[in-house]
Image 1 (cartoon, one colour):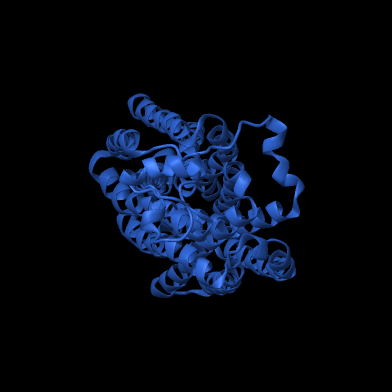
Image 2: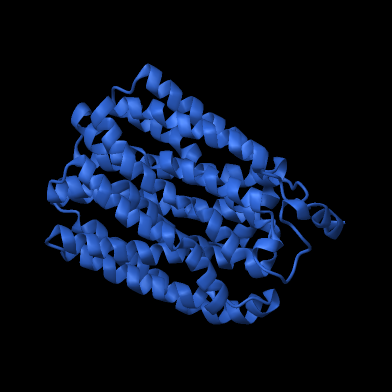
Length: 417
């Protein structure tokens, strides 16, 4: 039945699973739709970061309040990723994505028309933006379920390259805020979101042979297995570091080096672009050398770069260290999701949600801790040093589990881990 379905889909880019080139083995229009959805969702997910200097000035926010403001969308996105993971397996990824996009568009439009005039209002907006961050648990299974195991890393890496949406937020939001006011940016964001929603509805197609609906308790069954917790922990460092920095760097550059919001946005965009660009490369690298080997280098380099950030005395030195950290973390994001479908192929929807939730929690921790560090010590350095230590803890954990993983499920999956 599956082969017959895939044969019918060849005109859209799908053929029978197994072997062949990457592009011939899946459904390209759906992959494009998943990328665009993810890209624009991530753009608005971190929107409060580039706007933070303007919002903080207008609402007289302190360092801890600024840190919490940009961290709340990541925490909301973390929790909602689990919800979306459940929806993907129950009503399908295309319909789940459509619902999420409409909620975000309606929320931003309401915030623009009604205005946001208090710190509490920014937190409420952050919760709405969490629906955009939760797109992770929809876009990745939407794309990856079309592809055979040997191409999972590349498929999820390309769909996950939607992280690059954070570049657009950093590049354009500060300049638009300077021209029209920061609240107007919320309304302007609805325009590309609506265009992408229409493209998504036209191109996306639910993958064949979706998993049968399960009882709620069955969705959380992977949490009874230690491998799920390890993968979640690793992603809380790689993706948590990426999104936490993406949300916090505009505040860091304006506070630490007195950059204008626009120039801080350009610097942030350079860092985020580096991490986004290498995500699919991370998936491809993990397909080639194994996710464990890739993550070993990732955690070591990320820790070293973040220590360098804590000691950087000039803007150039800090920027170089941030780019190095983002490159490592971007590779790590792709590498973790090369491993997830090899171990949890039957639960990929819920595992994408659970692992993505852990990444969001890591991002919330980093963004909020940087604000607290600045308020309590007058410096961001302690926040970076603690996260560097967490990367080393992740490296130690990877060293502990890697032999068992290769023996128990790497060989069975037939893919290098």
